[in-house]
Image (cartoon, rainbow, N blue to C red; front, side):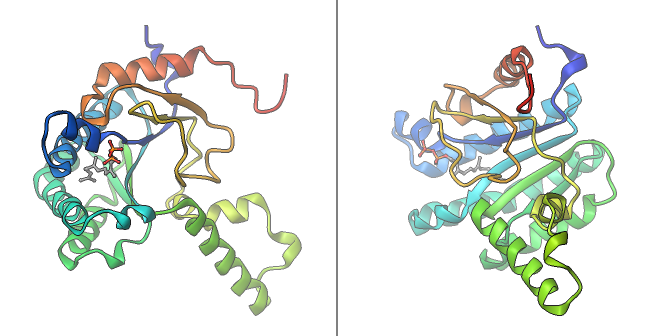
Length: 238
Ligand code: FPP
């Protein structure tokens, strides 16, 4: 049974398996991403219902550009569709959306919708829903280093003052005051971090679910959280 008094504050999810879900049905990858979007909508609702405070999903990695133009274009279209169909519900449920990553290289239409969703929801106070797009963990750390380097050069930051907190603050998550995730879930049976939240997952519990992302239901999410709840987090202590 899910312990409602021990819900992780921040759950991060690598939504993997859309392609295999589509392939099993002899459908194009785009059909898998479409089904994946539906699954994501259900999981956002569920996370909000059970009291998760921060939910972060990996929607497009810096490596995803290697896929066919058709597939990548389909994901951009889906982002537009997501905002157009969901913004009203996100507002109703008081969900705040942050975009992690740098979508500036996406088509204008997608950038415009992402900006609109972030700006319209910015004062909402319930679930914080972070969507990582054109996101890479190493790139995020590199940018933090660049920004620190500039401040050191300008003399506004002393090298001795480069604390872990200072680095955290300069990550995309830090810009929105998002704490580190207690739980990271990856679906589809793969057990890799794939450049997601590298710095932030230093002490996170990892739970790997066999379900392909479009088959990942709220019940599956509860199971992953139950697995997390059974673990004994020691942070290096005894
Ligand atoms: C991984 O499955 C999934 C992605 C690369 C894209 C995730 C996108 C969505 C869930 C669509 C909705 C998102 C938004 C924000 C509208 P995969 O294609 O790598 O699966 P595979 O490993 O089986 O090929």
